[in-house]
Length: 222
Image (cartoon, rainbow, N blue to C red; front, side, top):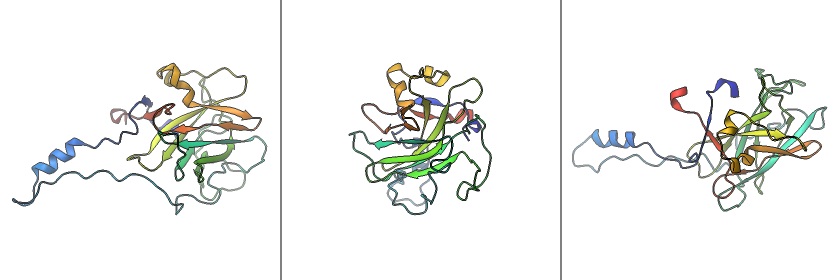
């Protein structure tokens, strides 16, 4: 759950997929036989595309039953740097319950009726659109309401993390230590804005204009 991780930082190169030169240098030194071409590190395999096998599961996007009391829709579209919808991304949602409690209930794949696990997984459709049925997360402590999203998609060497801060219509934009560390003109990419009485929209842009702010968890903090 989000509270088990160290404090994240916003990063501008989360999708760069940089390789590890230290490993390449080590391989170059440890040649098994003389006379053979040097060993070099091959590129990382990307985490997508996905073809709807195994990872998506029945009820995955439904953290609570649709139309149940207090339920809302969290939805949006995943786009690449050219603004084209990504048709085969997978998104995972991790969040506290409506009271701000970090849930530790088992059974996300086979939820007992009425049990909220705080986890969901949704595959986008051909138009890059995803949708969860959940509850508005309660504030944890004195902070704003937010959920953690993990994104898997084609062209990414590693999955990406971001936050969706829930902002109701007419409500002031949230503030916390993470948002204050993000350039003001980019904070909007972290806001899930209410678009109907029971719906919030959170679009994700992988690169380019309007790129979503992605988060990094420094290795030194782990």
